[in-house]
Length: 278
Ligand SMILES: Nc1ncnc2c1ncn2[C@@H]1O[C@H](COP(=O)(O)OP(=O)(O)OP(=O)(O)O)[C@@H](O)[C@H]1O
Image (cartoon, rainbow, N blue to C red; front, side):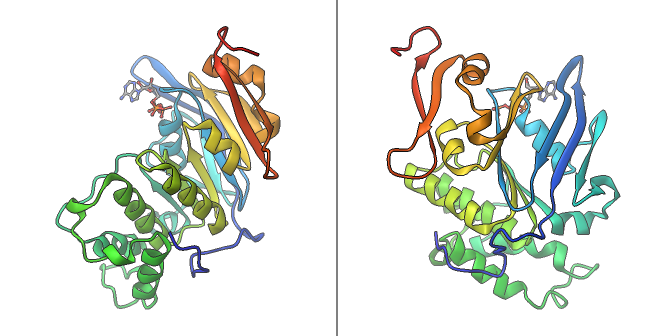
């Protein structure tokens, strides 16, 4: 993946909107899947959305993206109620990279990325008014390392290449707020590190659901930890990811330590709770 400066690159400077959720509750059937959840994703920072399987991360991302209406609570982006934004404005403000996003199989990689330009086109869908569209698409293809595969049919891509194409389509939307649902799932270690480095370098307001606590400790500024639909911890990574929280929420003996070479926290785990050696 290329790290060159790009037109969708914001560099983390001041004017990016904050995304907040207040009292978000979602009930599905007789289950309360999210229970009065508060979240604050500060402008231009990467917020990790953490929690065990089934804790509500995807459901919360769908509420934050405006894809699911909560039973209670509200989401604000840049101080405005998400529901008050017209669809196209919302799509230009905030975009979600889904975990298992489906894409029509006979499109090429460039065509998939170009789909991200739809909110920038005229009301009748014409490309005429999207004067920057082609340039943005080429920039994004280079940025996610898919320029050499631009003409490849979607169906021939590996899982990791598809993940990068989905990111490319989302970046082509030029959102200010980027929502990512387990974005590193299909990626090898090198691609995981490059993907999250790229997300940081974009400098957008980002919320990423992550299973890998090591990656979360390394790449997130802040975290929100869900457990059974409730927030169990939130704040800057090193303050929020305490040994006690990791034991209670994940059932593991683990803690953060200074990275031996880099100025950032590093997750050190001993094992499942009660079986650690420390
Ligand atoms: N339509 C539904 N009806 C009932 N329960 C549902 C429905 N959809 C999701 N759930 C439940 O809601 C809970 C939260 O699911 P969600 O996918 O948001 O969790 P998650 O933290 O993203 O999980 P994972 O890490 O496994 O992807 C789960 O227990 C799930 O089984």
